[in-house]
Image (cartoon, rainbow, N blue to C red; front, side):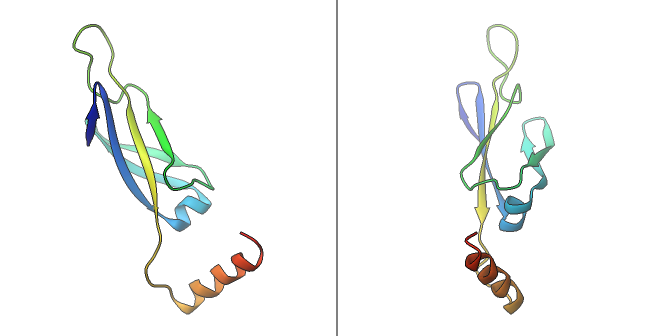
Length: 94
């Protein structure tokens, strides 16, 4: 975790397939894990805000927010099938 004032920042890596198709991941928070919905077409570097999941305010009520940076991980090695599927996507302009 990184902290700026009352806000918490965390980076999470997700596979290319999840970024393209969407789904759910578990994200660490200071209160434990939380399920986070990933929309199809999510780009690497996307920031998602989890309201009131940060550090409690010293004076007053409430908490800061938690921000989750999504990093799409690209596989280093692909099978022939995977390469063929990506080549097909490339040919279609995706």
